[in-house]
Each structure stands twice: as C-alpha cells, then as structure tokens.
Amino acid sequence: MTVSRTASPTVLALDSAAGACSAALWRQGRLAGHRYRAMARGHAEALLPMVIETMAAAGAGFDELDLIAATVGPGAFTGLRIGLATARGLALATGVPALGVTTFAAVAEAVPPAERTGRTLLVLLDTKRSDLFAQRFDAELEALGAPAVLSVDALEDWIPDGPVIVAGDGVALARPVLSGLATRCAADIAYATAGDLPDAAHVARIAARLFASGTSRGTSGETPGGLPAVPLYLRAPAVTAPRDAGR
Amino acid sequence: MIVLGIETSCDETAVALVDDRRHVRADLVLSQLAEHRPYGGVVPEIAARSHLDHLDGLIRRAMAEADLGFDQIDGVAVTGGPGLIGGIIVGVMTAKAIAAVRGLPFVAVNHLEGHALTVRLTDDLAFPYLLLLVSGGHCQLLMVEGVGRYRRLGTTVDDAAGEAFDKAAKLVGLGYPGGPAVEQAAARATEHDGDRFSLPRPMVGRPGCDFSFSGLKTALRQRVAAITAAAPDGRLSDRDRDALAAAFQTAVADCLADRTANAIRLVHADGPAPTARPTALVVAGGVAANRTLRARLEQVAAAGGLRLVAPPLRLCTDNAAMIAWAGLERLRQGGRDDLDFAPRPRWPLDPAAPKATGAGVKA
Image (cartoon, helix red, strand yellow):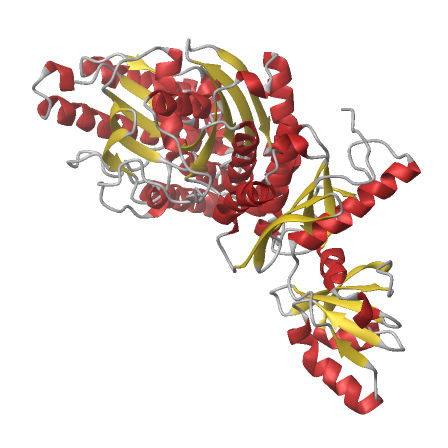
C-alpha cells in the first residue's frame, strides 16, 4: 500500500469506547465535521449513521481520506470492538491506514492547555468494575509511564507529588480519595473542566499530529506513528480452564 | 451479481464470495477451535477478540483469492444474529463500514436462514422443503416456503443436538468438540458393543415435532456413575466408554428420526395441494456431519416419499458462503438493511412460532 504523506492530512476518527459515541472529520488543520452523543448503549446502531452524517456535514467523500483513527481503549470491551471493527472495515474499503489512539490520550487532549500548565495530568477512567484505569501525562501531554489498573485504595500512593490536574470519567469514583488528600496533606489537586468522556474530535487531532510527525520522521508502514488499531484491553478474558476439560 | 458474505456468530471467522450463477468464488473459514479447547467449550470473550484480530485480513485474502475488487461486488451480507453478540458485532460493523465506503447495499442475514437456504446454492432446490437444522446451538424442524418465509414445526425444549453431543462426550471422558469424538467412539463399539447399553429416547412416540435431550444426558450421567461406582478402580473402561457413546448416538438418531417422521406426516397432511408439498427433506447444521444420523434420516425420508438432500459437510458447519448466498437471495428480492441495524443475539426465523426455552430460546 502506498501512503501519500502530507503535513495536513484528512482524518476520519471514531470513538465508541465508553459512555459516548462520536465521529469526527479533521481536514486542513481543523474540525470539518463532528457528531457526538452520550450513550450507555446503542453504539453499534449509532456509529455508521454518525460517520455518514459527519462526512456529509464536511462535504467530504471517503476517497479524500488519508487516515482512519479510533480509540483502542481501555474501555468497554464491546465498545472498543465496535469502534475498531468499524475503523478496520473503513481502512480495508478505502485502502488507507487505520491508527489507534488510547482513551487516555483522547481524554488528556481535551484538557485545555491553560488548565494543565505546570501540573501533572492524571487521567482516570471508570472500569465499571469499581476500580480505575489510570495514566499520568506531563503538561505537554507526553505520557509518564505505562497505563495501570488501580483500586481506589491504591490511588493515593499512585498520585505524584506536586500540583496535579485530574480528568476522565473515573474522577467521580476517585473524588473521596482526592478530597481526603487535599484536606489532610494540602495536596494541590485541580479538576479539568473538559475531558469527561473521550471524543472523536480529539482523537482526530492527535491522529493528524501523529501522521504529520510521521512525515517529518519519514516513517513508513501501515501505521504512521501512534498505535496499530488493535484493542488495549488491559484485562484478560474472565475465564479459567476447568481441570478436566480439553482432554 | 456477486455478494461478499461474513460470518462471526460463533467460533469460526468466515468470509466468502458467491455469485448468482451459484459459483462460490472464495470460501475461507478460520476455526478458533484450538483457542477454546482448553475451556471445553466456546468462551464468548475469547471468540469476540479473535474475530476482530482476523476478520479484515481474511476479507483481504478472500478478495485476493477470488481476484475481485470491492468495485466488482454488488452487496455485503453478514450474519446479524442469532448467536454470540460480541462476535456478531465485529462482523456487522465491518460489513457496515465496507458498505458505507463503497456505496453497496448492506444485508443482515439470520444465521439460520443461511443454513436453510444453502441447498439452493448447492443443489438449486425449489421451494418448499422440509428442513431439519441440527447444530451446536440449534435443533429445529422448519418448513422452508420461500426466502424469508419459514414455518417452525418443532424445536428443542432444552439442549441443542450438538450441545448434547458435547455434554455426552464430556460425561464419558471424550474430548471437545463432542460430535466427532462420540461418532468415532461409537464406530469403535459398533462390532460387538453397539447395543450393550440402552438409553431413553425423550419425546419419541409423542405427537408433535419438538425435541428434548436433557433426560438422555441425565440417564447417561447416571449410567456412568453406576458403572464407575462398581468398578474396582472407579474408572470407566475404554470399552464401556465407547459402548456408551454408541448407545447415546443411537438414541439421538432415534429421536431425530421419530420427530422428523412426524414432521413429514404433518406437512403431507396439511398440504393437499401438490405445490405445498415439500420437494425434499433437507438436513443442515454441524450435526448433519454425523454419518450414522444421516443414514437414519435417509431411511426416514425414503419412508415418507422424500429424497434427503444434505449440503456437503463443509457447507453444513458454519461458513460464510451460506451467508453470502442468503444475502444474494434477499438482494434479488429487493431486500436490504439500514446501517443502523442492531445486532440480534435472539432472532427467530419464524416470528409467529411460540416462544421456546433452552437452546431454542435464541431462535
């Protein structure tokens, strides 16, 4: 596959990893089309019509795309597969690459620069199993270490010293611990005004940036920067082999 | 007309291309058997993950094997249900995406309709016909009257036939999947031990066309318990194991034969007009691979004045050629689905049939 590199790619991005469903078209350095709806279920029904509306709103054809991007997780297993199966199907049918962006990166991208300046950004995602997926970023959105699965009790030890800002739909779950820290230790904890749920608009912006930086580095292959479009589950399937099976 | 078919509703990732001259241009099946074997059955989350890992690459391979581009196909058909929802979603979203990009009609096919119409692809069979659908997830008798027109005559009230084979294999210490394991063990026992044990035949002799296998499974369990309790080493000998497998297989064959014979009488009785009479008895689904069962059904069909038509084994088990074909039949009639189609883990072929329980609950 020949991928034509451009510093200003046209990117179609999707997200259905968590409590929202969205599609976004990034073109000539700005958002040209966007659909976003908060929803707990129904992503499989909503996503393709939202993609088509997004393309129509931008007056864009699928043949204009340089790149497809989607959130790879962590998130709801089914939601991740809805977005990634769609992204990979779109990539197959258009002949352009599909790239993955973590849900952490998508949420971090939504936090306004003014809010994160001088702070460590902590992205906390609700696993829906009473614990958290967590990752730290610096003020410039460079990841500081690998993603983690944390119990709420373990959160206190995971939070770094110095001023922090928290974002993500796991903040509600973490709030008692965060308030306790602020009160007992006078910790400087700020709450982001955006980035509750992932949004394809931010995924598109990240993907466009990765694509453009891939150009400058002269990388090649199907995934220009970023991650392959495969799920970041962070948990194995909940199953154990019976002792007597498989004979 | 050329249709791309996608099947991801259980533990096989499958892609096929079929045309309206009944030619299968490509037919690829990627079995996940090795991934599920350690668990003694299909694990839905493992299946869903594997479908996503492999489906796009398999479509690319099928298109290459058939030497076709997306601009040469006329529609995208995908299993929309019933089955394991995690896998169905992967197939449905992939199919929707391809249809959206290429401006092709999207068709969500009922998996059972795929099985039901396969003989029209393989044998060009005319409607109507009687269908015995026996698989790991289903056990039904249907009158197939036309595309989209199915009348359910009977279904299982508990386990599916293939499920019963899996459970029986486990009870006597044979491996997974149980169908081939039981058939091979029964074949070993045939010469001397084929009728040493006798097991009950639930529903046999009763009116109607419903099936039940749970009592048979319980009887087998009790028989195994009695034998192992009396054995000095507390174990089931290989010879007893094979004899029990033979007894189980014979009992299932008798059940299927009895219920199918009832169905033939029923459709002959309610179809005085020659056009309403079935042209054949069709057997489809993975359990139709069992040679002993097929032989019994040959007899039943002949006794009822019908010929038995069974697709080749490759098209009896789950595959995408049947999905592409069913989609093609729907498209020829002007049918298609919208891109907001919701995957249907439960999807009865005959919506007018009374709600079933057990394995029949999904369809």
